[in-house]
Structures are given as C-alpha cells and as structure tokens.
Image (cartoon, rainbow, N blue to C red; front, side, top):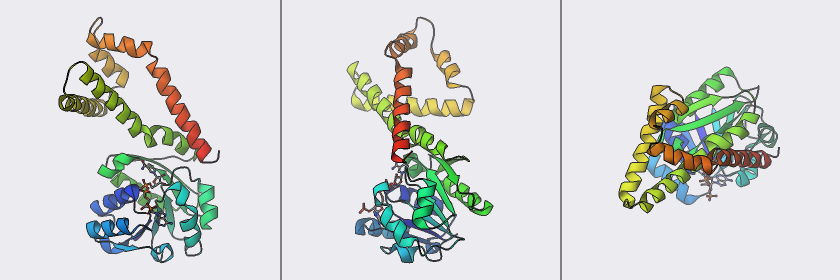
Length: 267
Ligand SMILES: NC(=O)c1ccc[n+]([C@@H]2O[C@H](COP(=O)([O-])OP(=O)(O)OC[C@H]3O[C@@H](n4cnc5c(N)ncnc54)[C@H](OP(=O)(O)O)[C@@H]3O)[C@@H](O)[C@H]2O)c1
C-alpha cells in the first residue's frame, strides 16, 4: 500500500509510525511532504522514508494520501494537489473541523475519508472515529480500518455529525483526563504526599482502574459502588463531588466542546 502524508507533525508521525510498525506499508512505499525542514529531517532520519516539500509530486502514485496539516493550513495543500489526484486514490483527512464536502470541493475529488483521532495514537492507544463519502470502496474502507487499528481502536460511523460529537469526547478527552490527574496530584500534595509519590499513586490508580473497567466488562457505576462503603472514605469524597456538581460540570464542558466543534466545522 503506497501512502503519502501531507504534514508530518505529531499526528502525521503517529500514523506513519503505526503503519510502518504494523507492516501495513514499507519505508519504500511511504512519502512525507512537509514545509518544515526540521520535521522533514527528523522523519527522514528516524524512519528512513522519502521526504519532500513538494505536495504535488508527493501524491503521485499513492494509494492513500493522508492530510495531516493544521486546519488553518489546509487550503494551500488542498489546492496544490487538487489537479493531481486520480479517482482511484483515497484521501484520508485527520484535520479537525474539515467537513467531507469542504474537502471534496477543495480537492475536486470524491473518495474521501474523514477521521477524528486522538493523541494516545502516538503510542498505539488512540481512539479514532471515522466516516467516508459514498464513493469510498469497500477495499479502501478496509484499508482505512487497518490503518486506524494500527493506532489503537477505531469506530466507523455512517453520519458525519457523529464526528463533531466524537471531537468533544475522544478528541478533546485526553485533556479532560490530564486535568483530572493534575487536580488529583495537587490534592494529594495538599494532604502531605511528595510530588513523586502523588504522581505515581495517581497515574497507577488511573491506569489500573481503566484496565479493570475494560477487563471486567462491568459498568463504571458498579465498580464505583464496590469501592464506596456507606460512611467510608470514598463516600466522603463522593459527597463532595456531588455537592460541587461534578456531573453537571462535565456535561457543560462536553457540551461546550461539542458546540465549538460544530462552529469550527461551519455547522
Ligand atoms: N493533536 C491532536 O490532538 C489532534 C487530534 C485529532 C486531530 N488532529 C488533527 O491533526 C492535524 C495535524 O495535527 P498536528 O498536531 O500533527 O499538527 P502539526 O504538528 O502542526 O503538524 C502539521 C505539519 O504540517 C506542516 N505543514 C504546514 N503547512 C503545510 C503545507 N502547506 N504542506 C505541507 N506541510 C505543511 C507543518 O509545518 P509548520 O509547523 O512549519 O507549519 C507541520 O510540520 C490537525 O489538523 C489537527 O486538527 C490533531
């Protein structure tokens, strides 16, 4: 599978590393086009792949062209490659907020997949939600599924509106988690633990709990109840979360992210 990346930043590299690592493509079949010298040198040295600053040349002969530039930089590469694309090539965009119709029009191309990945993809633990235009073939969908599985888990949705929702949950989600970790570490230090011990306790507790949730197959509410004895320490903490309106606050935050994601996508 010949694959070209337009934009070799953090997310482009995560995808590159995943597809090479899982043997979905080879170094010889991969090309990265990036305007940044630093990124090109880094990627050429680390992965031994071909690099270029010429987007038009880069897309030649590729089965899949991945668009991985920032949303504000999309217009230029899109215009550059629009008259180079052949109908059988698949364009896979990971650009937040770039709608399928905008991509199809800008690229003058119909076979387009839109993906909302997230940053844990950098270590193969990502969550990607994706959709495709009706022109994308079954084989191209299968290839997309295997590329995204190489970066973690993937879910196909048949309506684009779910991508705006996923943006507010899995796209921004890592930041919610990191904020909670930061607060928990600070709270642990406030009651007397050192930063090192607090950080270790918090991280392992979060990791262990996430694995327990996944492996047990039990709902989080049940696992929470198992830790919460009436009148005990967890119950004392839960009461404070409840008093502070944690559930509502989370709902408001996710709703704000969702509305912003729709706004950015021009909805
Ligand atoms: N990071 C996330 O959490 C996340 C999650 C989901 C989706 N995404 C999406 O993933 C995309 C990439 O994000 P990122 O964090 O990897 O961005 P990034 O680090 O800025 O990488 C983009 C790369 O593309 C280069 N570039 C800019 N204009 C170009 C052009 N015309 N032709 C070729 N290369 C060009 C940039 O160079 P310069 O730096 O010199 O401009 C940079 O090296 C974004 O659209 C974002 O919405 C990101």
